[in-house]
Length: 432
Image (tube, rainbow, N blue to C red; front, side):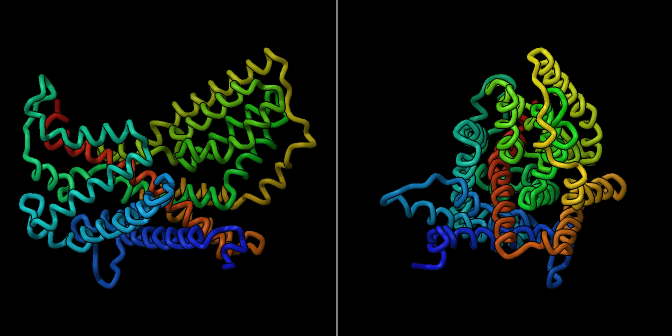
């Protein structure tokens, strides 16, 4: 029996964790080089090399994390796809300079065309696993739109192109696969995803939940109000609805039911509160970052514009819950069951410090791409200074796996969306 089997995990699962952590570590290292414009061995990324380097690291993670398990003879399908998801983007990374110098977008060699078909298939498969069949069909059909746009009626009619022209444009150009969505992920969003994953792993969700419990838990309808406030706190730092529900909902929904709220109401409150997290600055959903890039404005301007609507959203939700609690006579939680505010702040003050660093760098230094890296570095430093919170090897392994899955999830979806934007741009229909 192996050491990993003794700990309750097959050797294959343990190996998968190590491989994913390694890929995530390389991907984070590559993003730091690009975002901070560091010259590594006196070499910068040329052309689209940086974005293909991200695909090299995170597409295999998307395959391993989100591809459904298959048994029997087809069990080999997932590892084969994972290897291809590593090798095919690696080809584009290695040939990025050559493709840029020789204009492969217009006239690509036969091997580049074959690899382009492979990467399109891999991206669409990853999009399906992450976003489901509806997103897959939208990306696949609109990705092929330039092939039949000349036959479309009215505003949908545009310039048509041959099959290989479309393939070259998608995979070797700068407006599709590595277009606006991918550029946003690689240059801005990835740092915020890393910071959000770091908060999850080191207990940021529990801290904000305990703080909300200490402040509001004893109030009328306190369990539901805690759900709203804790979700707004954690949502403002994660920007992910799913992460918000998983982190806070696992506690708040049972607590609301225990306090007398109907199960359907408890679930709906948590769903609405967690959904609002994508609207709450400073870290919102991926759409906010794409909006800033598309409108050619700073991310800070998007945050400022979202501040009042997001606060109003949570205020209205808070008032609805208070009204429901008053109508049904639902009281707060017993004080003896609530955490102490002083104890909570004593154990989690480092989260508030990192949050303050993020806001300071974002607002005053205007370094929107670098801000989450500084906040993450400060949080890691504070964790390592204290003996009780000092990360060990397993902690680092968990953090890298969590960050890798988060980035792979977003990247896989936005690569597919890039095909849609590229097709509409290529045909001129986007202007219609």
